[in-house]
Image (cartoon, rainbow, N blue to C red; front, side):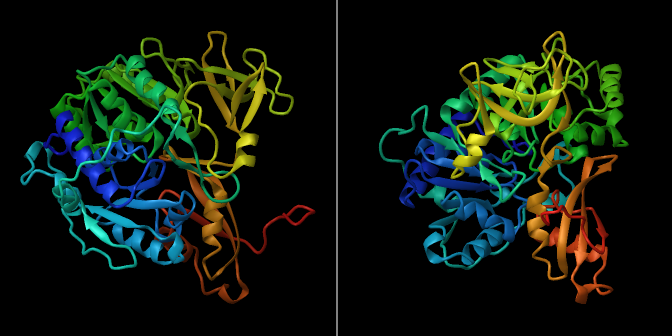
Length: 510
């Protein structure tokens, strides 16, 4: 459901088949990578299943990424084709044009969000004028070295894929990228087999089914949004009310109008919804299951949810490497500010990070997990893959890099991170990646990115910058902030910049 326009499962299948036929005509074959660079929309789901129909691999890319960031998602996974929004087409073509001819894309497919909007949106579902203008925008197709085709034209071609679906359980299906403590983002290799447990288990755990109506607002490029908005919903045959981006007023009206029963979100969305002057007028009585993760739910907000609406926020825990949840709170007995317990088939333990010996109940160590949804490793990074796993009692356990403890009932709690990650409203920001981008600024000699406390986002991004001598007195902190917003995704861009004469270094110069 998209602003009142529905897409049935029969229509989804028919469109995915036609899109698969078009992709195949562009030369997409089994195992090849196709990037999806879109906000949440029905086209995302159609494109995903079109790629799956060919046995190819989806590379989900954050639509907030800019030109300097996007090139990596062409070159590293050897992407053959990109499906993008009209607003993102220029970014794709510009990043593509900067690459050697041998690495450039074979085709770019561009869709407008308006392609699937009703001509007139009902008043109770209407977005703000600014949001509707964005949805209906029609920027010109960018010129460049790779041909560009419109979505509606690809569907209208009426092509059908040749042969039966070639995918097998252990074939690569999804390559979502996650950043690390060093270097550029790395692809997490997920097969059909590693995606299936959570696609099936999510509905079972949340008491969902064909009658479920969920709010699909967590970004589909993110592993959580992918699992609950693209995969799990199709597995259950449920209804998804799709939101292209967060808007608290629209979310409140969508929940009320569509009688949403299940909502997976991040806590900042709940906080923002409560901050609306209209929240008392929203009918939230249809909600049966409210869950999420990515950031801790404040105790006061969780208690307010329970007191005012009788809802318990069931937090979960997972990573891109675990195809979303490896732990979750049972909805009938959730604990607040808790990761939950290991879900179907998962063996998680708390171990000493150095000795790997299991810690006693209640004591802090690194959380390690073994389960059917754990990824196969990092794309083109065998050393990082080896470092990510340890063998305990003959089983391979993934090292989460998170410190936590387990209570006497088997519930897990996070206490800290081994890795230098910043968690801004559920978005994971890796300082090394932001630092590498800041070094491109002509005034920056050195940069160190750290986290800073933020009342709304939980954590935010702060950059300590050493200016080049000729830039001192000519470049302001706000200049760096503004430049960062132009050259990197908004959630990565430093909100705070502090100038320093020098950065402290170790004896080795690090």
